[in-house]
Image (cartoon, rainbow, N blue to C red):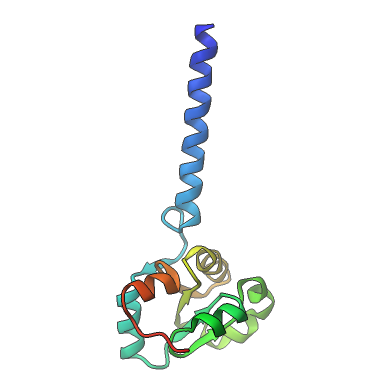
Amino acid sequence: MKKFGNFSNLFVGLLLLIAGLYFLYSKGIILANFERVKPAVAYEMIKKDPDIVVLDVRTDQEYRQDGHLKGAKLIPLQDLEERLGELEPYKKREILVYCRSGHRSVKASRLLADRGFKPLNIDGGIIGWRDAALPILK
């Protein structure tokens, strides 16, 4: 019986480790092929360069209902791969990417980086932006 208990503990520990690693991966904290920036840094970048590319990967409803960042181009995550051509002129430039909380923008940033773009994922999405008391357009 003792051997089964040890195996059980090892198995649970392994599952917790895998879950923890997946969480860190999904947040873009580990194995990220893109950079992350804090909302305040992104805001300064937008102020400094009004032509910087800002990509919102939320839904159209979220964009209209919750507002958006100044100059944001809306391409929902589910449409991003088929609409990459719209971003082709900006391939050599940094692209600020955000969503609601940061989960979808991590997926979008990975996709963009895999296709040769230079994404900068905004930590915490528009929620983090709002928490930093930065301006949102309605």
